[in-house]
Image (cartoon, rainbow, N blue to C red; front, top):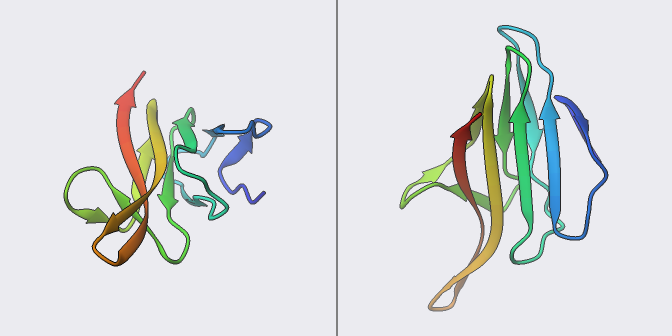
Length: 104
């Protein structure tokens, strides 16, 4: 597993937790996996004064509402929770990560 921001705990069957330890004014790219199943959950917690920039792999999309996001930043004290799903509309299938953000 690639990990650019700090360390991650061992992956369970459906939930992973990544802790970022980036220093102040440092933003590190972290990529969501593409070996996913519906309902897979990945949580990111930024403990350092910097930030993690969470990006999808090619062919995947991030949504927090009705608009797509290229990436999502996780800053000091924040937690992001991504849940994977496959959206089907007509004959189009889209691999989507929905994201929720909270602090402390």
